[in-house]
Image (cartoon, rainbow over all chains, first blue to last red; front, side, top):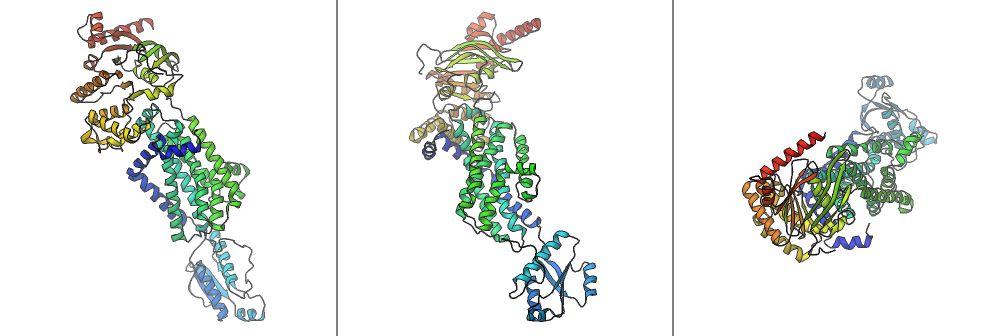
Length: 373
Length: 254
């Protein structure tokens, strides 16, 4: 390995490293499919994961039986409507009417506000309101209950009419997209970077250009780093696409320092490029590279904490999760984007990523041989 | 490290390469003089490509030594790479780069830069008649043009020794003839060229020939010497006769 300074000076000149990187940029620009994949894939995945996979329930058709007919009861209904979880589709005449309409499937939730609701409120007694949810879908019902509780809390002067056990921080609307979209940045980066990098090198092997390259005096480090540097840019483009679309479509909060996020992301991007390099030292054909890359995908989705909380996993699953760069990057992403965390909170995760990146890149460069047999 | 006047450009002694059970090249001893166009002939699988790959430092010999352009290929593999050009059967061109981009890429990899590099690129384009094709993608070139572009890339750093592995496979006769004129021009200026081929008319144009069969050398000499030695009318007849005898020996031994 050359020293960082020597490497930097080399970059500015016509070094083999620069020649390699420049060639890679030109090829990437001409490869329409790769460019489309770069930008299109994040957009499609964002739509899929952001819209299709939702653990919260929006727009539950709701009927209201308002026996109180007071301004207090009307503001409760408004607050519930404003959560976005309840679509008030009409008034109910009686409790029997509610039962009939939920059974018919016309409504999936009902709000009953008794006649003494406003009086209780005035007298400082805890007012009662009832939310009935079609609990055939337990996920829907728990989300609806939480949303109703949140709605009640949001009305000034109310003490919660429903016993509130869940106190969701950072995501008061319990929107799963808020949680999923930042994670998607990490998941997509790891999938596409490993695939693109490994394919790019194995393609040179298949076409015979790698054989031509290894008879030149180019050193292994320049060859491999020059090869992967352009893909780091791909990573940043993808990341930006997801963040911008996530902000526009899902209104995910971008609370923390984006500069910090982009700086720390470099370690994660290089770690994944390194994994791609590693795959390319094993795979002989593009098909093998593809399959090996996808081997990383399932553990990344299932064990990193992207979809399922790691705390609930059995110990072996947690150990495997500890080996994945994505696990640490997810903490950084969610920490910075959702909680506005700063570097003091993130340095441990960042350090793990830096060490992982350095280890996997140097391992791959060592494994790569300039002889072919 | 420079090649002395008396030292051969390629000096192989007892070179051997084994792949598992298969002995691809065995006890190969061979010296190629500077400025020589040296033809390596033999049927498919006779060890020609393995030999070239050992000379280029792509394969490590199992035994024996090879000095190429004054450098030991085993101990000083990286130094060898500065002093050789190599054109593989697959050409090693980037189809999605233009002609001039391919040449510029390899020139830079070989350490050329600035004005010197641009002057060298211009000279190569001129010498190899690539001027009208400079901005065409390599992937859209026909065989003859590809071959010349590959030669330009391999010659970018003006190496003293050039290895050509079946450079004219799948190329039309006119392009082949032009290619050989260019090769001889390089040789006249001092470049040593080791070339493998299946075309016997090309073999006749080499200064000296070596025949390989089943990994070892079975004949060596100028085309005239080889013809006289075996009382044959053409190199092709010699080649077919030698191969037949060698295969008989193998059958008798096995």
